[in-house]
Amino acid sequence: MDYQNVTVSIPKDILKKAKHIAIDRHTSLSGLLSQALEEIVEKEDAYSKAKDRQLVILKSGFDMGLKGKINWGREDLHARK
Image (cartoon, rainbow, N blue to C red; front, top):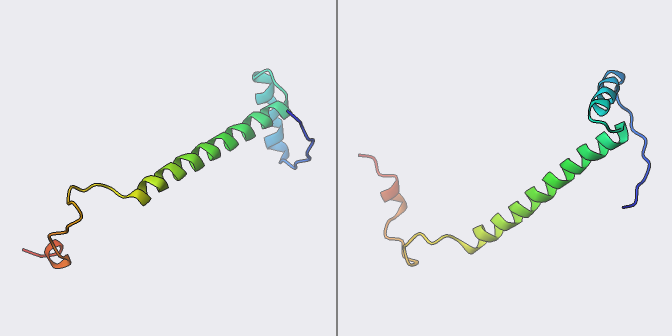
């Protein structure tokens, strides 16, 4: 895997807490950020794949057991009794 250095600006109080978290997890701040970004990317990829699967299902339609025939009209569905 190729790595690239980046510069980020982080509020000092967040940076201090993040360094402590990194130490607790036996990693570096860079490692902690890499893990967090990797999780974000994995979640986005999984969401995108799930969305694409669901769109295919929606486009193919659902079998409602009507065999293509609708036996009621809008008025029937909205009739008040």
